[in-house]
Length: 228
Image (cartoon, rainbow, N blue to C red):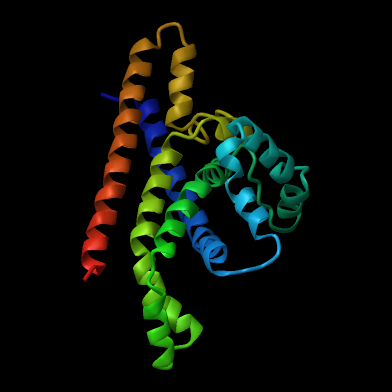
């Protein structure tokens, strides 16, 4: 049985992971389309930049976010001065850090799905008079749906376990930024926190496994529906 603090950490993790997916999903679809369909100078550089969080230590990503979006950072200072928005050390900041770390996973899944779309179907729609937006909305996007769904669920599952970037950019504030991994870290530091750490570790393992299984199951169901 979870204690109130552990339940609060679980709830906050679910909120942060959901917000991170909602924040990054439209951008991930657009970036994946650019990487697959567009031809422009700097495409390779964009590809490398998108996947950079996969190879950088999460603490480095958190630090860069702190430099950019901190109260006195170029972007964070502008947001606070003009809109009163503060991201560092807030739940929104935890969602931003999680979104940045899980973004490459989402783009990769969507990109693979888009690469498998039959271009002949888009050409057929074009010959029937469908414009670029209509072709994307009625042909390309539905065929990309398995990858979009799989990427979103995978990013959600990964977001539940994000630690380094969150603790660096958003800190470990109870009820505000203390997600499940941070609560586990806090329990490990406590002299009598062995049982709490074990409960949180098992819960994290179960959530991560469930997310990956759900992503695969949903992707297969969608592929079956869209298949011949």
